[in-house]
Length: 304
Image (cartoon, rainbow, N blue to C red; front, top):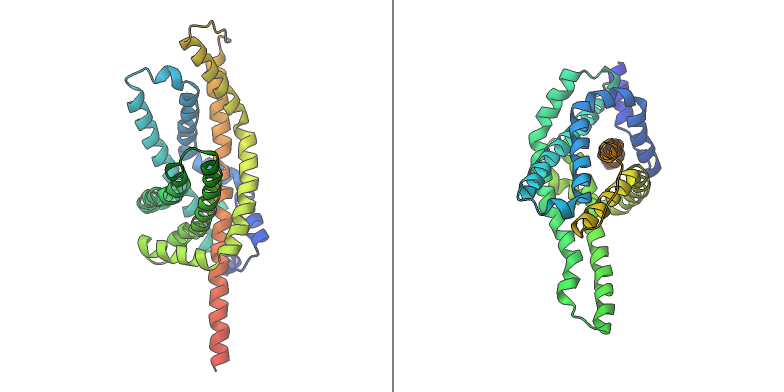
């Protein structure tokens, strides 16, 4: 009976503000449980993120190395794998909750069995996503290829860039409904992709409102969390450029150690925000499903 009640509580209609607040509550209510269970994924993912920031700070020095391209490729692949695994972990826990179970009852073995089950679907989804992302990115870059150098063309460039940005936003906002549809829907990846995108276009205004709230809050908090890492990366970058120019550079002996620790901690804490970026849209998808079901039931009653 409790399981049925919990399931009903998940599958209810929510306003935009409640989608966000419930998304945050999903993480905070069982934070320690989710944190401990996700450590096998978040730790290596944080290391990859920290290493990317470290490479950015030493770009000038490392580019001279022949192994740089191989190093970047290996880190990029590892980052993609663990990022996909983190997505799988988030959505497997959401799916577990949608079935009427308490997150507090999640076990390590059960969790990673679900993660491994979702992983191939998430890999396919993320590959498709990378391809689709190229469309709005291409739109953003298009003005720089079309417009020539002149005062008039400069105005035209910024005008066309603004138009391209607006089109990119219009095209990308509905995509927030795709992954919840893939994870909680009952169709295949490609059918769910088109169905989720169509739902996103239909409910564009509400999704944009939630996207705006999530983006502003998450980006501000993420910037605060990553600011120490960014500052240290900038110091590293300046030092490496100075060394290449033959200037004397004096940094503390334990600077690399401090950089490594701060990069890791900043990356680790910012990864927790992935939950806040994902879960509110799951609740919004649930709201749309419940709303559509209610409309159909009302139409059926009116038809009688």
